[in-house]
Amino acid sequence: PTKVSKICCIGAGYVGGPTCAVIALKCPHIQVTIVDLNKSRIDAWNTPDFKLPIYEPGLEDVVRQCRGRNLFFSTDVDKGIQEADLIFVSVNTPTKKSGVGAGFAADLKYVESATRQIAAVATSSKIVVEKSTVPCRTAESMRTILEANSKPNCRFDILSNPEFLAEGTAINDLFKPDRVLIGSLQTEEGKEACEKLKEVYANWVDPTRILTVGLWSSELTKLAANAMLAQRISSINALSAICEATGANIDEVAYSIGFDSRIGPKFLKASVGFGGSCFQKDILNLVYLSESLHLKEVAEYWRQVVEMNEYQKRRFSKRVVDTLFNTITGKNIAVLGFAFKADTGDTRESASITLIRDFLKERANVSIYDPQVPHEQIWQDLEEACGDMGIEEIKSSVTLRPTALDATQCADALVIATEWKEFREGIDWQTVYDGMNKPAFVFDGRLILGLEEAERLRRIGFKVTVIGRGNGM
Ligand code: NAI
Image (cartoon, rainbow, N blue to C red; front, side, top):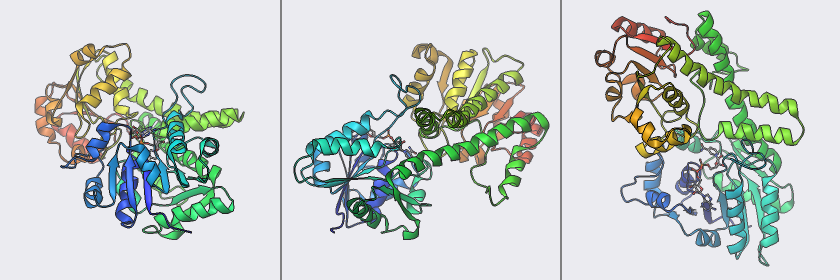
């Protein structure tokens, strides 16, 4: 069978962009075209000075090496489809906002319209790869759509190839994936298509890390992996509440349980709650799937992982209010970090948004600093989150600042909401203290202050509260 020589990726977002840029880098013999309907996004990918639409360490370097060589970005979706022998569908699959399954099920309208477009314009056979995270059995729907609309002599083979990269470390994750998962129908043709995609990855991934399984297993694995990762966070966050109430220290607990080889040390960091576009969406998706299968107890089990995350965010904003003598009305709160985690400009489901919404509801004044998130994004997120407040009202209580130090001027409290390295290492605490109202409160929602640093801050004069530790720790 012939090898893949032209790849098209539909969707130039956080997943499609980095994954296919890395394929282009590692496979110079393959032409890769990433297409998107969003013109401003494509324009940004094509900017001469590489002002890319997403911030991801190492990404610019990869794009610089390949763009114009064997990596192209375009809004011509039809041409991209026609030329390719393998097509990644990497469009967004957000939670449905209305209709059946609203609030839980994945909205597949983008996947469906991309699939219909493939069927409509393809004039030769294609391997269609589901890269987006989708509910179980979506590949089946895609196949039905493709087969019902295809031209004669066009064969479509569908593969599931979910993406496991994490934002902030995407390039490293793509260079050295823990595993690449490919699901296919267990037919002759299905296995052959699977083999072709496997060959693409084998250009840089150790073959023992390329796992091939059935289509449905592959689809379910992605939801399951995210559910289990999020569950670790919710478990450690649940324990952090016990620590705060007892004098135990969540970092010490996490460190000690992580030594158990059956548990392992990773992903046990307590925080103000997980965010990002995937964890909540994918768990809700799993909950919806379980309910559709009449597995009520299973649905409830996973739903609790999301519940615990909401509780953690609520608990933290309440601790801020309680500590500031039960009222923050009219007080100035500096929020450091708006992205959902460090090393990304992505704000989807960021815990910071929920905290700021809570502070605004208490009629506090909020000043915000984040090193990567564009200001328009912050305004848009706050407007969406604070449904009953208009943007003018929000703007009268919120200011966006160019540095962390600026944000803390005349603040009564400083809240660390994202674990940016510069908050860990680059803050001159004495200067911050001098500029704040007294008593000056610090709330560390990301465990960036160790026991000793917290002590040092207290010696300067700060009142310090750290997630997962009792007052005074
Ligand atoms: P995104 O929203 O950043 O990108 C999706 C892009 O698809 C958008 O630019 C949109 O304009 C484009 N698009 C939608 N319909 C289209 C169509 N018919 N034709 C052409 N372009 C179209 O989303 P993101 O974050 O890249 O996620 C994509 C998928 O990957 C989702 O299913 C997500 O669950 C999954 N995923 C995301 C991860 C992440 O860290 N963001 C990690 C692993 C999986």
